[in-house]
Image (tube, rainbow, N blue to C red; front, side, top):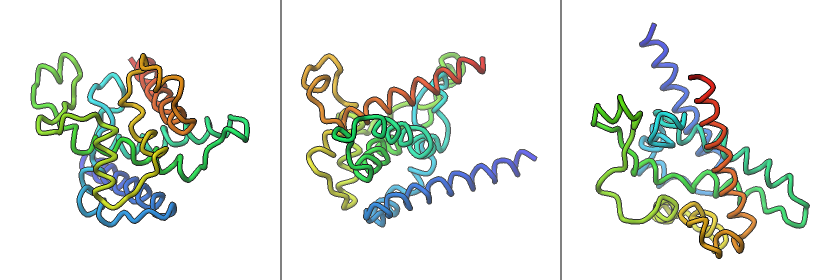
Length: 198
């Protein structure tokens, strides 16, 4: 029975990943190189390191980007006055790509004590460049032939910025602000769901 459930789960991971590629392709983005280089890693990547987040499981990255974060961003955008709304295609593009570096940055934690006592199911790989996740995601995407405008690059890296930084907090574009808010809403939702289950 467990083996069957695991096979169904693996099929869902693949289906989610194919939907991720399809949505990018619908935006006119060629995903051939991204798929060749990072397909398996993206399919299986977690979204977070800690069990308490509710997002530290195999396949959580793509699942969260597709079914949580991007829908939040789209709804936020639609709630704004029409003159402030950003292009939906641009918003979806950034939402789907701005966390992809987690596929290479997060690896299973082999420290049993941290896993069992602290719920740290994943850790950051030691061979990562000393840049933040958003910038790393931007570089990965660009190396796969995906281009970005300046505004898109700002939104891709907005989570790298400290909220105490005035420039990022009060002068970010609407696109970047929506992406940051969608991330916050996603984490809040999943943390609250996890607390309720305990």
